[in-house]
Length: 121
Image (cartoon, rainbow, N blue to C red):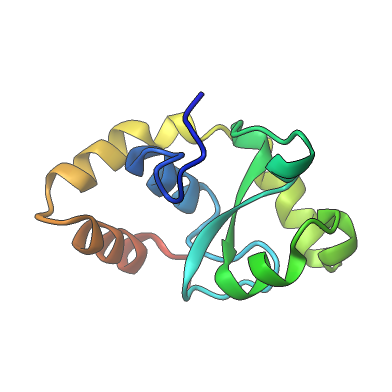
């Protein structure tokens, strides 16, 4: 398991694959800006870095939720989205993510390109 060290707890490939699985949108409010990853069961209470425990969230929702149970924070639509997304493995997007990262000079460019081309607008 990766160490908890800011953004370094997850590889860029896995982060990008998770964003794609979740359609480059916050699972709570459905925004596309300032995306980060959220542990459904927080690490502070024993949550891990498994695919089913990590979802895409905007910084605002991630911060506002804190350690609150996700099902109490999320509205009905978000609960449905989360239940669907967490059943999907991000591994199916690994080769795609490797390709996107390899084709761009920086992580910022790769992320911008992927979001522009794969966000379900």
